[in-house]
Length: 307
Image 1 (cartoon, rainbow, N blue to C red):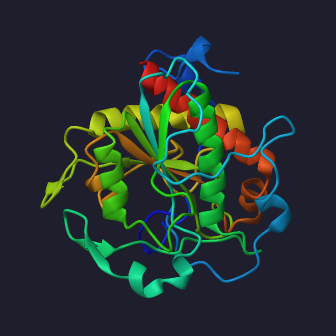
Image 2 (image 1 turned 90 degrees about the vertical axis):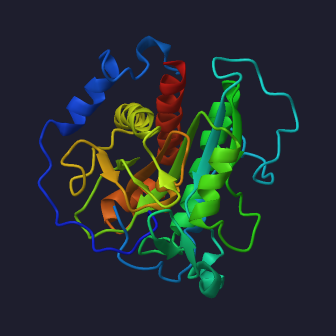
């Protein structure tokens, strides 16, 4: 869930061929989604307290993939990175929210400067009706994504790794990507919209200029990054683009998110699905699907970085 609490848009019918059309982007020169080079909305309230979905939250990534070792956010790997197609590239992964934000509501409600105004430091995020928190989902997918990108030689930095009591605030999240001089930043989220609203969407930065915000240099590159991720996400997960945001394209442009407004490097948010819809929740709580989601994002990022 991105950092606001506005009412989700009214559901719109999804074009029947939207998923197929978006997947086809990967095969065109315009979308440039990697082709043969491939390896292998907004929440309406805070998360409801509840038990974590134990079986799915702690499930291994896959029978052949060991769990990713937990390290501090900015720490370098204990072993040298393998040489690969992404050697020399830096990717910042921003796991949406923080599992302990709910214990620090006073701190995360403090207003911070987002360039064009002020907004809450962070939010708790959403959750499934069974209590599987978005913050747990985003960390799990981010760990999987990190491992996939590191296997291709990329230097990967997480904005946090469940290693701090709350946050980081949205302005600090943007600053981490900027200071890392990242080639790409991806903020991982899940939405908390109405039942019946399904599918994923990628949020792109709008052309924003005011105060400390100026996205003029990253709008085009971020749109390219987002389109490649969307195309690969369709192909890898089988999930359709959102039927309630983006008009069936899987892409949505916004100028109200501090994490995008304050970025000086290419950045997008990925809303992987709607945690409040039972069908989407079944996917989001499945370890195998989460691995596919990470793979789709990794493939899209790699395609973007390879040009």
